[in-house]
Length: 174
Image (tube, rainbow, N blue to C red; front, side, top):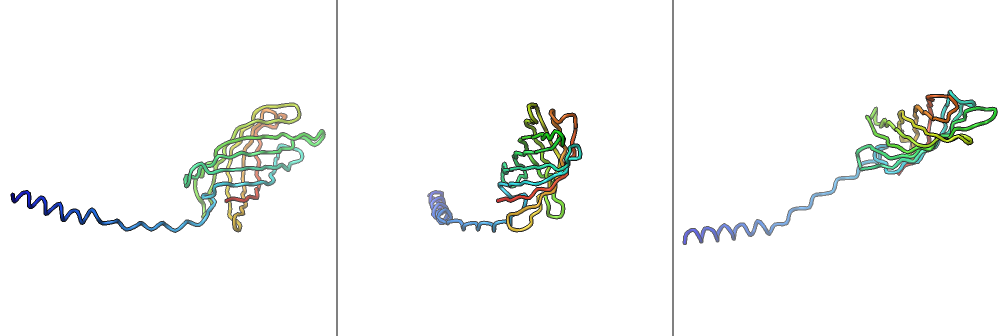
């Protein structure tokens, strides 16, 4: 009988503990937007193509974050690389790839974009790939300045081989 009374006393006292509602955990304050926390990034700009004539080239890209906070982006890039002046020919590379944030240098994330895709100039069609480094620097609001250095290789680049292309992109991200 003593055991039953003790068991009932423990059950009655523990019922009060089960009736408690835990206090809600406050949501953390949202972090300020940085270049690494952008979901979508659009950019276009100019670059220097030392293997082409004229040396001025154009680049455009779109990047989308694959998961929150990992620093991994899927992206598409289009390069318009003049190959010769007379006759004027342009090698166009359209590639898709992945960019990964490697490290941050004084609040500026450094990404390594690597892509592969198609390349064409005139009637020639082939493959292209590129890699390098890109640093999105927040200018104001959602606007970014993105210096980059890339190495591009195309199978239809008229023998220009590996092309080192330093450039600057102007972008917008949200």
